Amino acid sequence: MAETEYVEERSVSGALLAVVAISLLAALGGLFWCYSLQKDLGAAGRKLAVADQKNAELSQKLEATNARLRATSETLGQSVGMTQKQIELRAQSILAQQKIAQAKLEEVQAATQKQIGAVSSEVSSVKSDVGGVKTDVAATKTDLEATKTQLTRVVGDAGVMSGLIAKNHDELEILKHRGDRNYYEFTLQKGQQPTLLSTIKLQLKKADQKHSRYTLNVSADDRNIEKKDKSLDEPVQFYTGKDPVLYELVVNSIEKNKVSGYLSTPKTAKTATP
Image (cartoon, rainbow, N blue to C red; front, side, top):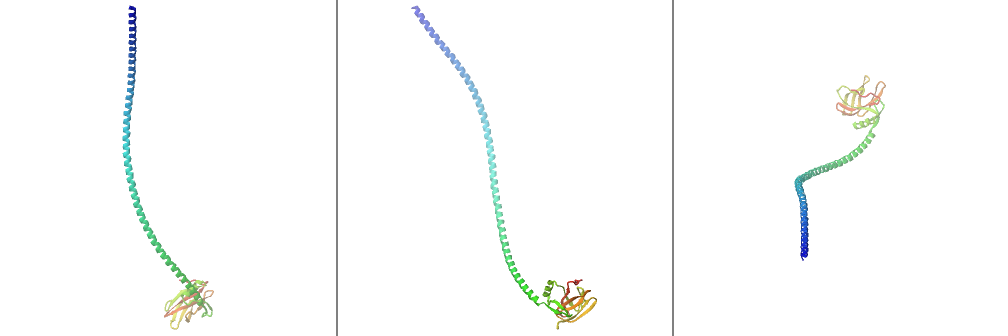
């Protein structure tokens, strides 16, 4: 019975030891876990502190970035505002210039239209003038043809058939344009010194307007020839020169103490000298 109690006491002690051992093991496990947890918490805390520091730095950087963005935005807004204003002013200036240019263009167009109208009137006038000139030319041609038919040849006072005789200035111009002979117009006044024509001199001695007759002296080759009582439009002829050639003079107008006409010489004769 005593052995039984001993055995029971040993069983209780063993169980108790086991419990104590288990408790110690549990305590040690708990301590180890607490230590591990503390260690993990410390590491986590350090990581959290680092993270907080980084977050603070990021926050500062973000704030600085936001500040720069706000400044940039304000500057950009001001620039855009100024640019918009400048664009509006430029647009207004361009519109004003366009209005001025349009006004000038309209003014130029009006002036051009006016000039075109004036030119058109002048062209119409010129056309009328050209038409009139054509008519005048046709009439002149007709008159010339009529005048040519009036030019005649007659026997001169020297008994030689004369060239064509001009009875007025217009007919004389026709003879000049024919180019057959040389022609010199003259006007002689009674009482004046002799007038030099080509190689001869003429001096009026008498002019009878009533009877259309005259008398003059011809100086040629150092001799005087009197042509007395000659008629209007009569060819007065004489020879002169080293190799004598025929000269003719015709008086177309007889007034009181004055006669007018022309001298005709061959193309081979000398020209008039002062």
